Image 1 (tube, rainbow, N blue to C red):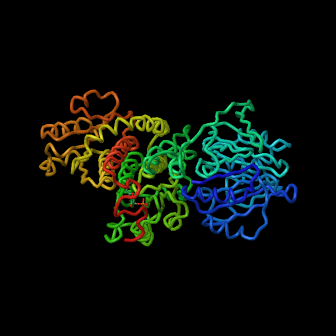
Image 2: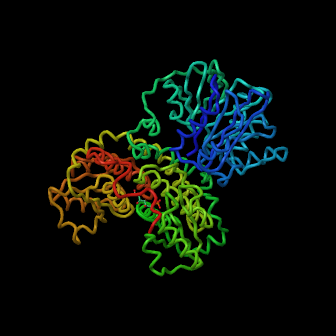
Image 3: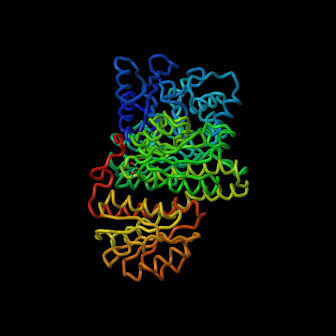
Length: 610
Ligand code: F6R
């Protein structure tokens, strides 16, 4: 995810900014850049950008005489446009006086570009550069006013910091969805996407809220809402050290990433559907309507957690689009001589986009003539480059080895693809609208579950010393059981297995005893009664029982004391909610057992070997 750092004060800005960029490296990036409002020549902004590591940028800056006490800098994680120097921030308007850095996504950038007309010339493929030109078009001598006016035309998320050559003692920062923090020093201010790059200098911070614009000089900071009314802000003291700041105060990246889910879920779906039409539009699919109609079979190829997300995706493709869909574990698919033809659409699903087996499987599918597309998190990764289209899941960098937020966003994207095909083939606008409304409610519902983290921790305490566990689910909740099981085993090292509820009595039930707990996903879906019967069978064997149940299902409490309630949603979307308590459960157990939660033994984040 992109990072921002800006400085205004008495120090030379360049060293502060370069050091700040290094502190932001943990967020993940593919290029970086810096702009300084020069002192020597009035009205001159110096900009230097580079692809790759901050070291490359530092190398380019060596020997350049760039002095100035105001500046902005950025680490970019590509979303619109490839990884090139031209696409790296900061971006200028036409006259080279206005310059800005930006985090977020501008959904209506094409519309804005069209409205701006051909008076403006662009040097990059980014939405941010269009924003710079939009602000420039509103500029009549007052930079803050121009930004406020421009933002009223923008749809999407923004966190931006801008400066202008005609305003040598001014930085403007605006937040609309993308976080910004101001660090307060002695006659100096820092502004960044999180507190990490400023902690060396100050622990006093002001958090900007959505819809707030700050005008910052060396001497003072004033904050306004988008109606230009002044707002009083409080200075807060943060206790975090550098490492805690990277994790936004969470003890581990995994916990932070679990809690990121509501926000990044919105990033995944934003701008990719039309509620009125009850339809989804994932532009990256890169297929004509005729090609889409010609698809007779979908194959979802992935490994590990991504393959469990794919198992959920299978339900979406079959139910919404009526297309027979298979899930193939990449390492099996590639050696199986799979039957694939020009009527087959193959999606490779991968957080890293670098998983060796998935890459090889996709190459095989391509060789055999299928449409091959990617559903990937890391921009510019091998899968993103080698497929003929697809979508980024916009989960932001996932640093903990155990995948959490990438899983939920993969499901979000597959659901939207299924809707896109479904609206072409069989489902009505009303059905599409119902699904989209339910999808939009997911972030708030995720938050309701996250709020229960402390209660889930108490339950985890009761289960932490068992040596084995079963995870049971049926239908669309069987992949949830698989995902709950892999999370537990990979970070706590407790042995666990996942089974479809109906399979228990075909063998595994022999293992059950008072020492072998079962975690059952028993939410109110079409298989609720069947699952409840399976749970009764488990109770009869006296196995300790933890249930994930739908809010209001008091009957679940009759079966066990340990119930985690989740909000109700459409059956197709249940995995987006039901998996979260299992992530939290695994996390707390692993912490209590003293495991290295973010870097579990024997595992790598990106499995680039077979
Ligand atoms: C489990 C986990 C792994 C990955 C798998 C695929 O928490 O992280 O099972 O899901 O290695 O990785 P990607 O998605 O990068 O292809």
